[in-house]
Image (cartoon, rainbow, N blue to C red; front, side):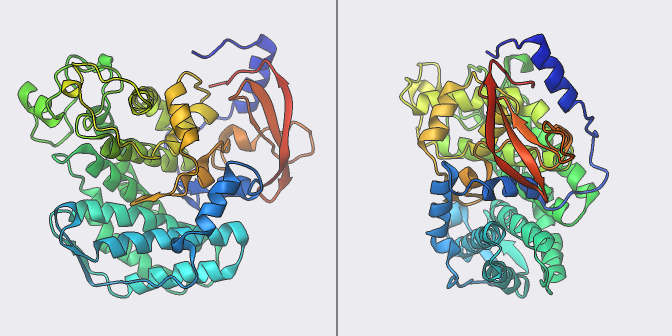
Length: 437
C-alpha cells in the first residue's frame, strides 16, 4: 500500500506536476522508441554508479558491442516452428540487437565508430531483405522489427551522416510493418504483444500516425485478454478478432486454467518465460507511447503490478496451489520486468510489489533475449519521463533550468538541471515524502 503524504508535500508536488498531457501526441518526439534522449542523458550521468555501472560493463563486454561484429543479411528469412528451420532467423535477431547495442554505445560514448557500426549493420539488411516466410514469420518480424526500430530511431535522430536512412525506413515500412501491424489474435498472447511492440516503434520512427493509433488500439484490446483482473468478470476477455468465443474455448486458450485471479496471464500455465515476454512487450508499448505523450500505464498499471508480483512470488519459491495449472508451473521467468517495474515503482510510486522488486534487483544487470536488450542500463531507477510533463518543468533551485525529482522511495531526491538535457548528481532533500502518483 502507498502511504498518505503531508499536505505541504502534496501541494508542492501537485504544483510541480500540474502540466496537462495530451490525449494523443500531436507531433512525434524523437528519439522516442523505448528510450528517450532525456533517459539516456540520465544514464550517461550515472555510468560510474550502480546498477548502471555493471550493466554498462556487461554491454561493453558483449559480442553485440564489438566493432568487429559482422552482419549476416539475407533476402528471405525463413523461420519454422520454434525457428526450425532457422534460415536467417537467429542471424537477423542478433544483427538487430547488435545494431541497437551499437546505437546505445554510440550515444553513451559519443564515439562515432559505434554509430557507423550500427549503420553498417542496418545498411547491410536494408540492401537485401525482402520478406519473412514460415510459420514463425510474424513473431520473427516482431522480434527483429522491435530492435531494428530502436536502433534506427537512435541513430537517425542523434547522429548525422546516415545516407541510407531512407532506404532502411522504406524496408521497415514495406517488409516489417505490414506483418506486425496486422496482429495475431489466435496465437499465444506474447506473439501479438511483441508484434505490437515492433509496430509502435516502427510507426514512431516513420512518423506514421495511423499505424501508431492502430498499434495502440491493438494493445488496448490485447491487454485484458492477456492479464486477468477480477473486474473482468468470471472469464478473461477474448482477444479482439480471435475465434475464441465460448467458455470452453477461452479456458482451452488459457491452457486449461479454470480459476482466474488477479494477475494470472493467458500463458501462466504454459510457462513463465513466455509470460515474461508478454509482460515485457506490454511495458515496451506503454513506454514508447509515454514518450509520445500517450499514457498507457494508466490503463495497464494494476494488471502489470498484479501480474509481475504474482509470477515473481512463485518464481522465488512460492508453492503453486492445486487450482493453479494443476499445481505445477514452469518457473523459467527471465529478467523481463525492468521497464515495467521502473514505471510502476520509480515513476508511479507503487511500493506494494515486493516480489517483483526482489526478482528485478537480484537479476540485474538484465542482458539480451530476442527483443529485450540492456534494460537495466536504460531503465533501472530512471526517473525521467521522456522530456515531457512534470519532469521537465520543475525548477527547484530557481536557475531557469528544469530540474528532475523523485520521491518513489519516500525520500525526495532532486537532480538539478544543467541545460542540454544534462543533470547534476542526486541530492537527497529529506524523508517523509511519498509518491505523488
